[in-house]
Amino acid sequence: MLLNADNITLIKNKHTLVRGASFSLQVGQLTALLGPNGAGKSSLLKVATGITKTSIGTVQLDGADLDTLSTIERARKLAYLPQMRELAWPSRVRDVVALGRYAYGVSSTRSAHRSTARDTDAINKALTDCDLNSLQKRNCDTLSGGELARVHCARALASEAPVLIADEPITALDPLHAFHIMTLLQTHARNGGAVLVVLHDLALAARFADRLIWMQQGKLVADGPVEQTLTEDRLASVFGVEGRVLGREVTLLGPA
Amino acid sequence: MRASTLNTLLAVTSVLALVAACSIGSVAIPVERLLAALVGTDSASDVIVVWHIRLPRALAAYLVGASLAASGAALQGLLRNPLAEPGVLGVSACAALGASAVILWGAATSPWAIPIAAVTGALTATALIAAAAVNTRSILTLILVGVGLSSFAGALMSLMLNLAPHPFSLADLISWTLGSVANRSLPDIAFAAPFLLVAAVFLTVARSGLAVLTLGEEAATTAGVNLLRLRLLVIFGAGLATGASVALAGAIGFVGIIAPHLIRPLVHHDPGRSLFPSALLGGLLLVLADIGVRVMPGSVELKLGVVAALLGAPVFVLIVLRRRGV
Image (cartoon, rainbow over all chains, first blue to last red; front, side, top):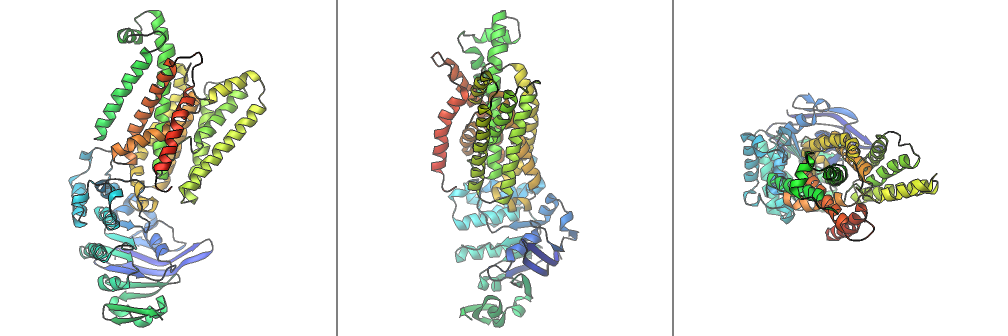
């Protein structure tokens, strides 16, 4: 168990965004977090990543309390792909991916020989895995949305952090690029990582995830393997839509 | 271009510009006489002209340009916007306000008074902007906070002029707020130097974090950046550098926006890597501008700050217009 969240409750400006959420991320599993807009998914991710402090409850990362870890220690164990991914500057693709190695002391302001072979390997592998080798010298402002999504994904993978948490990584991507990113996340889990990803595409979630966590109005309402938790009743109660479920196939028909 | 090549190129050009600044003037001093004067073995008049007039002036221009450009580059990295700059954000105005208060009320009994007052003013402004930055995602809001700070500092400055005790100090003050490095001495530089040194250390340490901040604050934190520490480094670094340069030369605008703007494409838009070459270019630009001010014909010498604003403001507007969105 790489990440364990226990009884997380997040209260902001007197609004309870997350109440009593407990879940854990297992090695080798891709877990999808599902729920309608405003259910508190992003808030839950921010607590799980340590960006926001939980009001009540604890988060343990690889056996250590998240609050006790330094930002560097945390970054070596957990990588995060936030929802807002606009770059401030039109940086070079390879430079952006290399930022994923910051926690290991790699920095653009130091000379290249200070980064170890392991750093270079991690950056090269991430670039190759995300199919960015031909783009690595391009500036990010010349990339398409799908290419940029792969750059961010490569940045997160380059950190070699076992836990990977992504907030809607495939929103606004065409089906092929969405498949590509989901495959990358799945491979990361298969190689000994643990992945938690917020998705709005239920069909892709059902297809790629090992486990689904359903969230509604700040609470986790179901947590388990796709086959067990993906039901027509749940689609109606959580999303308010009528759908047909056939194993891992899901078809949405309209409002329930 | 490799960063080291760029830095070497700028450093060599800077030295040449400083030599030119010491050599060019109403009395031309050729390079061999200049070298002799620098080691103090030549005619007394050359030694006085070089050591007491031209070198302090050129060094002051260089340090002020470098500090403002480095502050600009660091603030741009922290606020993730190319329009952030000590002048635009009101940091220079607050520093000038602090220094003016000391000058006007004759509290400048110690040579440390003006630098300390200017640095205090600048730090107050950077801290206020950083505090606003925590609470807002919008860079437009921050720029407007800066405009507000600038106006408020300007209003307080007017109030002080209004209540000024002696008309004599009034003229002094106005001339100083225009921004100039004329008649600076080596001791003036020495009193600004400690602040500049600390600022240089802070900003140098901040560089790698600023590079990661390209990803946004949340991604940068989870990538291992200690945001609070980074903010403090930039606030204190930019505040000290801007305060000390205002103490040295008054308010000189736009160097902090133009130098980083020119450097950024040469370092692949990496805010960390842009810091050092921006400082070198900022220094170089102000030394060249100051040579221009000195050799320009006419009975009244133009103030460096006036020339910088005349050239800088249109460039600022161009940068704004060429940007997509804010």
